[in-house]
Structures are given as structure tokens and as C-alpha cells.
Length: 138
Length: 135
Image 1 (tube, each protein chain N blue to C red):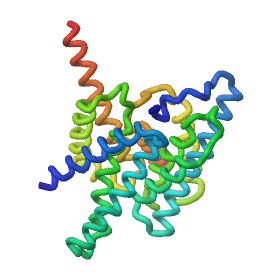
Image 2 (cartoon, rainbow over the protein chains, first blue to last red):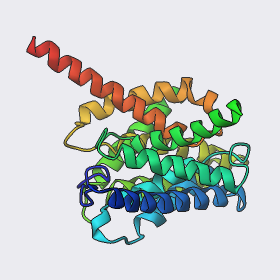
Image 3 (tube, rainbow over the protein chains, first blue to last red):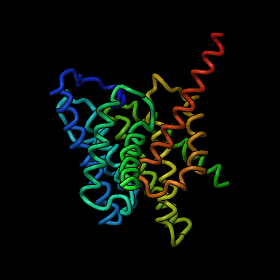
Image 4 (spheres, chains in turn blue, purple):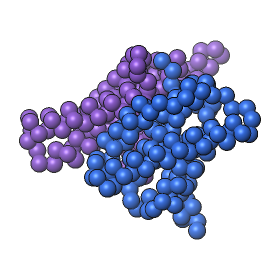
């Protein structure tokens, strides 16, 4: 069984393909973050359960084969980022910033650390940390 | 005693995810998320039926967090990480979980990042041992 990172069905060669890949990641990451955050913030679902539920829903979302498992992995990574407290995700702009950074980091590092457990969590942590750092700087 | 239970929960999460992800119709994401949901409700049921504790939801969430972290370790690819390395990663994760994670409460991805660090440590150890054997 291949891990999401091993799946190289979608080769990115041109700038256009890179942008499409990034957009797919962005939509998936945003969906994961938004669903997980909404579940635990508005519906009082335990944080772990919210993230796991988001990942499970995302794993059944069918995407064209050329994208492989990448969108599902991005949804799961987004769910990890969505585990943040409301002190960090204060509004739509924070949610969008985390998603853009997360999708960007995912796209740039798609062939690095393949098959390493916790890679998706590290991407989510990078996205959330960059928001905290940005707030601290400005 | 709690430390031992944390190690057991982490190992259970890692090994169960690692095994389940190999089955047809499953992948690492489905295995990790499904097992965590099942684990959460199992602990909640045990707390409510057997122990009848009033703070059962919080206890279940705490143990599910440990299991969830373990399942991230178990998301490692079988061609890269053996059961032996998975055990080392899980023990590393337990240490990070108890020392570092309380400082990062409320930050999304901290659990996954801890799992990544523990997997990277075990991978580095393997590379180091391989180099020493070759020298």
C-alpha cells in the first residue's frame, strides 16, 4: 500500500501544472482546516475526534486519478492545522493564511521525506507557526 | 504507571495503523482516522460503563490524543520503516509527548510534528548504524 507521499501519479513539470497542483492542495487544505475547526469550535466536538472525522470524510472524497492521494493527504494535513484553538484562528483571514502557507509548503516539499510518518503534521505545524510568527512580528 | 500506559497506547496506535494501511480499500489516512475514532469511543465506553467517571469525555480525549499521535508514527511507509524502527519511533514520541507537547497546547500540527521528529530520530539512528557497520 502506497503512502500519499509515494504516489507520484501527478507529475508537475510546467508552471501551469504546478499552479493547478497548488490550487488543488489549497482547496483540500482549506476544507480540512475549516471542517475540523468548525467541528470543535462551533459544535464542541473533541479536537481529536474532529480531526479524525475530517480525515475519514476526506479519505472518501473521490478526486481524479491523476492527483493520486495528494488531495486526501492535504485534507488530513488541513485537519491537523484546524486543531488550533480559537486564540490562533481568529477569523477567515487566519484560516486562509494557514491554508495558503500549508498548501505552498506541501507543494514545495511533495518529494521530500516520502514515507515519513508525521510529515503532514509537520506541514500543518509549519503553517500554524508561520501565522504565530507573523503576528509576533507585526 | 501512566508513562507505561502512554507507551502502550502509542505502540497500539502505531502498529494498528501500520497494519491496517496495508489492507485493500485502506490507506494510511483512512486507517489512522478510523482507528482513532474507534479508540476514542472504546475508551469513552469503558469509562462510562466500567468506571462511571464523571470526567470520562476528557479522559477519553486525552488517551485518544496519545493514540492519534501513535497513529501518525504508524503512517510511515513499510519499505522505509520496519517494526523495529517503528518501536523506537513510538518510544521517542512518548518522550516528546510528555516533555514537549504540554508547552505547545492549542497549536495545530504539534502532535504530528512530534511524530515526525520521532520518526526522523529513528531514521537517523538507522543511517548511523548502517554507516558504522560499513566503516
